[in-house]
Image (tube, rainbow, N blue to C red; front, side, top):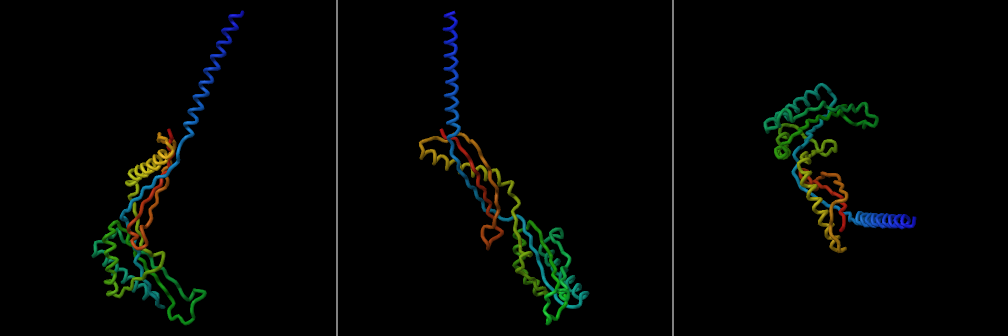
Amino acid sequence: MKDRLIWAALVLALGVAVAGGFVYSGMRQNAKMNRFVSVRGLAEREVIADKVVWPIYFKEVGSDLPALYRIISAKNEKIVAFLDSRGITEEEISVAAPAVIDLDAERYRSSDSPYRYNITSVITVTSRQVEKVRELMLQQGELLQQGIAIASGEYQYQVRYEFTGLNELKPSMIEEATKNAREAAQKFAADSESRIGGIKRAVQGLFSIEDRDPNTSYIKKVRVVTSVDFFLE
């Protein structure tokens, strides 16, 4: 009986020791898992837009609606011919229906206005020939010589440049941003007398595409910021 009690006590003591070892190991592992640093990495690229949307619009005023439509149709034909002669394809040109404002129907029409109708015609060039279209914008004076006064300044008819090749840039930019994040983490680790371990968590972040500046909107700035948690050892 006495021997059995001794053996039971030894087994119990061994069990407590093993359990304590597991608890200690778990506490060390938990402490290790809780030692990490959160950093951000930035990657930027400047790229040239690969798509342009160019609305060409002009206005006509008058009181004879059929005559106005004939004038607008003739001017539209001249604009399309101008674009075609400069290498813009039919698929890249879209002619919208004229937008007509009946000034007699306007509530706040000025009583001394001599015209009844104000008509806006828009021809839109949507093209990947960005450089060619930019050159044509500088040649609009030729349309003036043909009696077509191209309008400008209205927000809805602003030239718009786009960059559509983001998917090709993503892998290298994410790699660069992660590398920059690791460099920041290594600096932090060195200051705290630690070493950088593996990645605990990483968030890619959103890509943004913006104009580089207001004067060169055909040059885009692509940007991404990644957030990375590194273990500290």
